Image 1 (cartoon, one colour):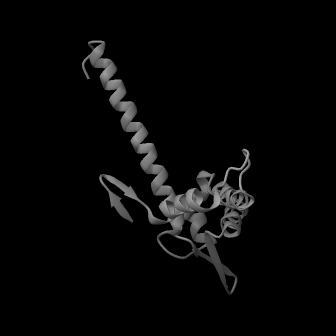
Image 2 (tube, helix red, strand yellow; image 1 turned 90 degrees about the vertical axis):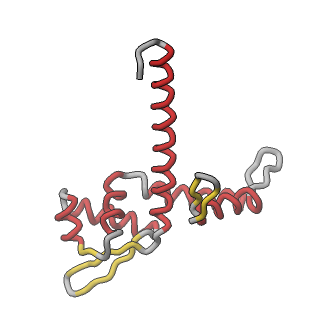
Length: 147
């Protein structure tokens, strides 16, 4: 993590942006470079795996350490089949890994960059909420409602 002014920058996110802008995107007649297009597809596939609140909750639970499916189920509720399905999506995307010990499957985070992505998105949500709060306060002052 680096800091530029008051803005926190997550190195993997910044590096990806640099790669995309400096190396891969070459708009030639409105077409995206085939290498960039494939990279965009890979990024979209990984982001799709994060586009579910249950999967995000599982990841943040696993941030505490390795867990069995039954442990995750105890925290999350729902059915074992549903939790296993979500873990399979996260595993296929490369965010989690699993190991078998007897009859138990243990899951853990294999790519912690997922938390950088979540933090960056949370920062954006927070900035937007603050901007909206300030706009509402300003409008109330203008309308004489205080604030």
